[in-house]
Image (tube, rainbow, N blue to C red; front, side):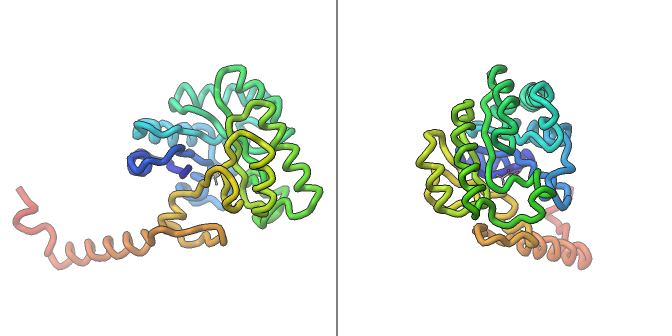
Length: 245
Ligand code: KIV
C-alpha cells in the first residue's frame, strides 16, 4: 500500500501494480504543509479522493476519515463515510482507534462499506501522546493494542494498519488476527507495508524516521530541473526554433 492524493501520482502508482492506494490524512502534512493531520477537512479529503479514484484502474482505494469527521458519534461517522463513498467513489474507509470507535465501525459496516483499522501511533491523537515516538513499548499499552486488534477483527474490519510499534509486537498481532496487517514502522513480520509516497520518493526532506526507505531523491531532481528551466529561459535557449509555431 502507498498513499496518493492526486490524479497524476495515483495514475503512476496504480500502473506500477500497487494493491492498495491510501488517500491518507497525511495529505494535511504533505499536500498542505500543516504540522499535524488534524486540520485537513472532510471536503478536502473528498477532493483528494475523487482525483485519485479518477486515475485508478485496478487498485483498491481506501480513504482516511479525517479528524473530527467520526469521533462525535456513529451517526456522524456514517454520514462522513457516505459522503466519501458517494462524492469521491472510494472503495473503503480507514479510521484510527480501537474500542472507542467500535460503534462507528459497526454502523459503517451496516451500510456496506469496508473499514480498515489503524492502531499504534495514531497521528490524530498526537496531542494526547505528546510525541511521535514508538508506541506500545510498555506491557500495558501492548496488551491493550492486541485486544484492540482482535476487537477490530471481530467487529468486521477487513484489515488493520499498525504504525510505529515494536516489530515483535506487530508480529504477535499478525499471528493473533487473520485479517491482513499492514505495517509502517512495524517490522517485516506483518502481511504488507505502507509508506507515504512523497516520503519514499524523496519529495520531502524534513521527515526522516528510521523506518523510511527513500527510493528516489525527487526534491533535488525537481529542483535541478526547475533551475535548468530558469537558466534556459533567461538565456533564451528555450524555446528554440523547433519549440514554437
Ligand atoms: O495518513 C496516512 O498516510 C496514513 C499512513 C501513514 C498509514 O495513515
